[in-house]
Image (cartoon, rainbow, N blue to C red; front, side, top):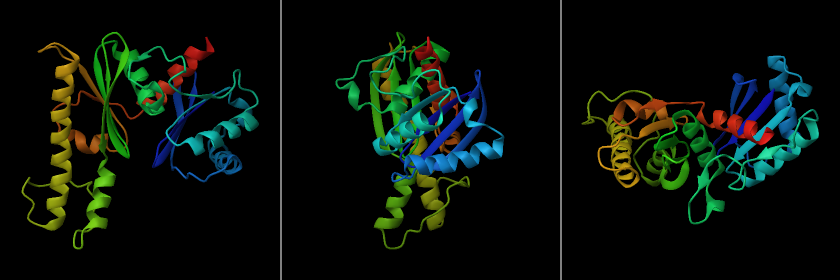
Amino acid sequence: MLLTVDVGNSHTVSGVFYDQTLIHQWRLKSDRDRTADELAIRYHSLFQMEGIQKDEITGFIIGSVVPTLETSWISFAAKHFTNCTTPPIAVTHQTDTGITVLTENPAEVGADRIVNAVAAWNHYKTALLVIDFGTAITFDCVSRKGEYLGGTIHPGIGISLDALADRTAKLPRIDINETPESVIGNTTVSAIRSGILHGFGGMIDRMVSLLSREMVPAGEKINIIATGGMAGLVAPFSSSLDTIDPLLTLTGLRLIHERNQK
């Protein structure tokens, strides 16, 4: 079994693959102060609930944007997963991923962005955009040759809602899971909900248009893949998203691990 771990700023998503099938998945908060021993306690409980023995884990890979947690995870894996056929893998720009990173400074590209690009490229083998709805919203551009070109970074939906509530005197913190009845909000809550959902949907469409224009000749189609916790929330308000794949990052980690096994 392979344990894959995607450590984000807000949440950590982990999954266990048996062969190429994801059989278990967990989504937990990312606690930057968590130690290797604390991770061991937590995952011992999760494994126990699913009937997994730690000796059954024969591979481990992590993609992390939180350096302190990456260190804890690697220490935890090295100590407790003693049946791994290779040492624990932490994805960086130097990892053999099968794609070439063409940015000015590849070292500053987040592991999650590289991993998403790998998963999408392996599936489509065409020019594509990956949009990840996380703490930040990232657009990642991959050429038809499988080259990671770069992209854009935007404040995420959660950050925007927090800023409205924290930096204004009267605007409340709201739940945006409900669909706005109209674009014109006739209450404060409906106005915020409409502004967030229609606004981010419009931003997605505009950025897809601009990035596509730079990536491919006019009229040529590129694939648009969305992932991340809030992708499904924004999708109805955008006309650009072709596919929503909530497992994109874990799949990318699996593919990179397989490549490095060979």
